Image 1 (cartoon, rainbow over the protein chains, first blue to last red):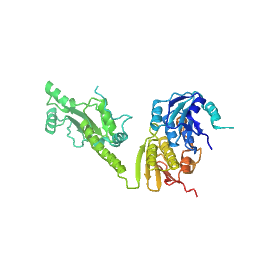
Image 2 (image 1 turned 120 degrees about the horizontal axis):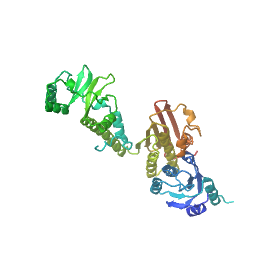
Image 3 (image 1 turned 45 degrees about the vertical axis):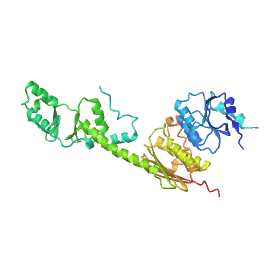
Length: 114
Length: 308
């Protein structure tokens, strides 16, 4: 059973910045890769897609796998068309200053209860 | 300089680009040409212009173009009183010519580049074969664009008049167009949601379609995505125009990739595309011929997977 983690907890954990707040308030898992076709192989549901990629293809990939939210790492600037597409498709977009590894580490506490 | 023709640009719609590249100079040029010889005098040439209503006369020796006489040359001849002299001494001898096999886009750019209103056309054997004016270009383009747009409109109407219980859509995908790649799959997803397909089915079909669409953008010279949805199947086809795949068994292996660093920096080329498409599809078929192209067909059962 995957946990229901609220988007606001996710944002707080990575000291993130809410770029766009979409329809879903929670996520159940995190899938991370810099390669979109890796992400497309996942069978997880209700995910946060975490990536160092900031292009529109990040949003399209998120849409195809039905992701609830996306997070861009390393404080990368996010192009306008990426933000626009996220709004159009209603998918939450978050940015964190941390690189992928640190961001995953900080998030892991929310998803692995031991 | 007047504004440039807005035709030969990167941003032109594909239908227009296809037309100006497919059409050759010889498809647009006039072949009925009134010519003269170098020993004909300018008065004779003036009369041809007047009688036939043309403003430029090529001067030929056998089949070869050796010069041009324009209306301006005739005006000068009348002005300075040498109208009865042979063309040879007064014709323009250094000429800008087009070849009949060049795409029409060349002719368009020549009209941008040079101040002339018409260009002589020669063939590979350097024989004079015709003349092309901006009027000829305009007429050929309008003719062809009419055909092209009629075809596009028919296609759109086809989509609207789907057979009951069946939906077909087709989208063309351009090489390296990562800005738009994914839009066809997005449309498929919308259609499937509208049909109330299950979440799993929508997701598997979207992933299969997206992988194939991105593949066309990355690896092919461009191609098409075709969707056909009937009562029981979602048929997703990716057809491209080459270059074809050498070893089909190899490319469906996980992790096999021919993508370069540039493609990877955009998040693609993990070597998972085809194996992933195969994974999510209920049926998967790939045919490829080197130099010709690749045709991939993946089918997802609308009712979901048979769990038994």
